[in-house]
Image 1 (spheres, one colour):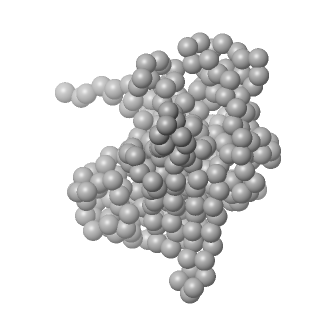
Image 2 (cartoon, helix red, strand yellow):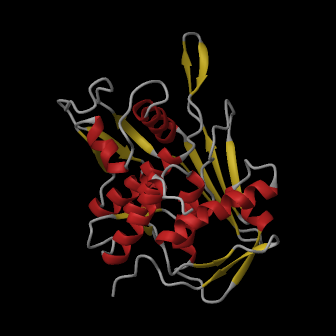
Length: 297
């Protein structure tokens, strides 16, 4: 007996058809992500009440320090951004920066308007989309993020900044469709603004929305979009190396391999020209593949 695809599988199949017949540019569905957030990614799950968090990929290290502030006589840790929502917000912020060339990003007059932009369902309650969006937006734009490159010969490059210089949120979470008198805005820091304009990786919003429930799937899709721009010959990457980049939360390498294979299946259903061999338990092999979003010209 053949099982009918569930709603998530149907969404992925539908996205594959949309992407095949209409390119992202023509569909007005272009998103972008700075390679700095692709080479080393945000955590998939909540790291908890920690003073800092980092992810290392070879000679590149991404470090995040949460915002600390006094509250009711105690120091409150606002937390590290994690999961799918900050990834979607970063993709939106990068796309808006590329499009407008402005440090000031307008989120919109209503909460529902912005949630629709980034593909987050409107739902209430302590674990609903509205609460999670507000929490992750605050974590993301208040955190201090450092990016350090070492060239192996004593050379060092360091970028250290908050993402936002100023943030204004006038939304009514109880009435998400209600328009505020003023538009909610974010003013990016000069450092982060420049970072978003340096070789941003083009992405397809339709793909992001269809795999948004899995931060690992989002990471793998962005990584493939980044790697396939420059990959000229097959390359093997050990599973242990891949785990340092994407899965430091996974203590069991077998569990990590299973999750990567599961999420690559979603991506390759949409990106049908993507060639990746996941069968070996020693390494993943990447092959040069036709880009999902072709370069201009």
